[in-house]
Amino acid sequence: AQSVAQPEDQVNVAEGNPLTVKCTYSVSGNPYLFWYVQYPNRGLQFLLKYITGDNLVKGSYGFEAEFNKSQTSFHLKKPSALVSDSALYFCAVRDGVLTGGGNKLTFGTGTQLKVEL
Amino acid sequence: EAGVAQSPRYKIIEKRQSVAFWCNPISGHATLYWYQQILGQGPKLLIQFQNNGVVDDSQLPKDRFSAERLKGVDSTLKIQPAKLEDSAVYLCASSLERGKISYNEQFFGPGTRLTVL
Image (cartoon, rainbow over the protein chains, first blue to last red):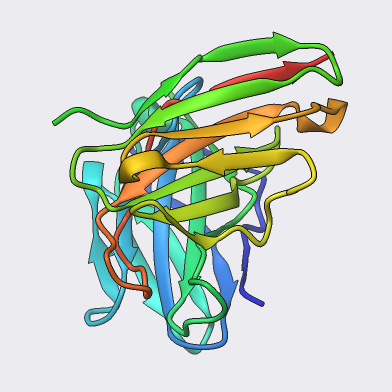
């Protein structure tokens, strides 16, 4: 069964500093990896995805993520954090192998990012 | 482009009562998902439709939960009877998928926050 781990419940960073939110995964086949962000009282918003190709993926709002197959990781990064980046971030994975009726998206438990002045 | 619409935004009921949630996906999106997000956890897939057919309902508690997607557009999710542990945010999402292997991003609605007393 596929799974996602986000080892940090919360990440604190000062505005202007680089940020990293960690994610590791486990799948049977090739992974399809996603990052979503959730602001209070709002639904999840797509940031970026890795399907195939270049291991460094660029997404919305200056975020990027690096796919590392050997370490089964897909860490989210941003060179310079903003206070407005403060939100709940979810990593998610889909298995590229079709099992049963489909390949569901499995989410991690989320990491709360807090960017302070 | 209009996003995924959900109603109601909030609902408070007593245990053993019934409740229904409504979702209108983005126009043209063939696939619709219902997720349950319990506080402090990532969203968990309840059911996935492609057009008006069920692709995956393996995690839907079928003794009390039901969902339908008539005409392959709008969808309703019902709980009858509700239990205390059903208190959660119910998220609807849609995507462009047309095949069985899904790798497109999902677009989420704002969710319905259900409180069962």
